[in-house]
Length: 494
Ligand SMILES: Nc1ncnc2c1ncn2[C@@H]1O[C@H](COP(=O)(O)OP(=O)(O)OP(=O)(O)O)[C@@H](O)[C@H]1O
Ligand SMILES: [Mg+2]
Image 1 (cartoon, rainbow, N blue to C red):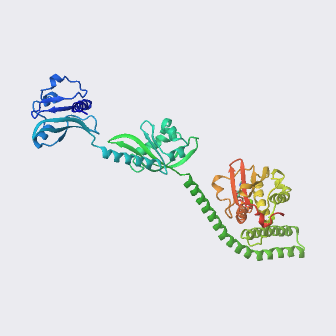
Image 2: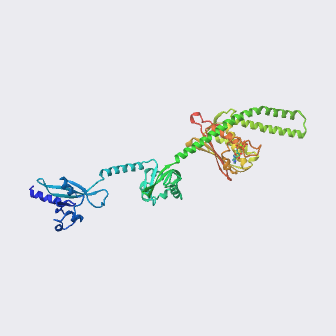
């Protein structure tokens, strides 16, 4: 390639350079300028003074790189005078000396941008990505919204918790949609108050949110207002699902209740057993001698009546003692496979003809086949007897008694539901009805041991008893008893 061609290309390269390139004499005279797209008139520019033409100044600029280059004889770089539109770049001027032998003949001044934040930007970008990842993979639902309620951040956990896809939430969800009713206003009020961790902050705030399906979810919310300077720009919240914890709490409370109940039963059981034994002997004496007096002596009608009354009361005492002993499990139990339907039918057979049951309609809904349970028949009879009697007493002999049995195969349990149409059980006594000696009956009419005995029997079987009651409409007792495992030879039941 000839020198001429090379020179031609060099010239073309200078022209193609899209920024201003000037050749300046040591006296700041413009000797040549490229066509950088600024469209100035070359005839007016060439020969003019650089500082006058480009910066309208009588003297060379203070930070002129040509000036510096002139002093040092080495290339120099200086920021360009003026305001910078793009904060990421600083416009600069570069000056190179053009030597002729050892003397500087002229300077090339180049205009270009210095990308000052290159490395810093890379770091900022990677730490931004890291923070984003941190939020998106958080185990709590994270949601940020701007002041208008538009969603800015919605992580995967939020999507799982609220049932919206991330895209759906970002496009069309409003922060108000995730709270039921006016709850969003409450949260914003709490966020702006001093009461929950300081103004603009919310710590461990219990609130319910709304799933896309309309379900209410209990949440522990930590949130804050995001400020830019003094300006409020967004809110961010961390939503922790409380359902698991709440369930655990409920189970713990239930276990505590059961423990308390069995403790009560155990201590009262011992007491009852002691009292019952103490009473048994004098009671036998009373009945024996009353009988003797009634048989041996020729008594007047009045005295005979009084003594019959003594006998009746003594017998009632004996029954109570029997119940107490049963309650204290001092009697021996023989466990065999039993068909619950048969046990119920037998109890009903005994009760049906009693006067109390004359005006009670008994509705039986017994499962046609039930696997046997491993029980003591006396205890089963006792259990049904007590619950059915209570129901009849509550209905004061008038109403409907429902008895239903179901086999819950997935739980391997037999469920017995005994319901009545009596007045139901008031809420305030509901938690006491299984307590020993708790009764609402008149003195002498009830010992209050019936249901505590039932409770003990059910526990003994590894079962569970619950009560549901609608005041004014009746009560339903639900008993779940485990069926006998097959290998225990549960095929034959009585
Ligand atoms: N079906 C029911 N409807 C309304 N209240 C009931 C029912 N069953 C039980 N109760 C209430 O529970 C209390 C306790 O019942 P529980 O069987 O333990 O004792 P009681 O019936 O009062 O006396 P006892 O059974 O020893 O003669 C009753 O006094 C009654 O207030
Ligand atoms: Mg009772």
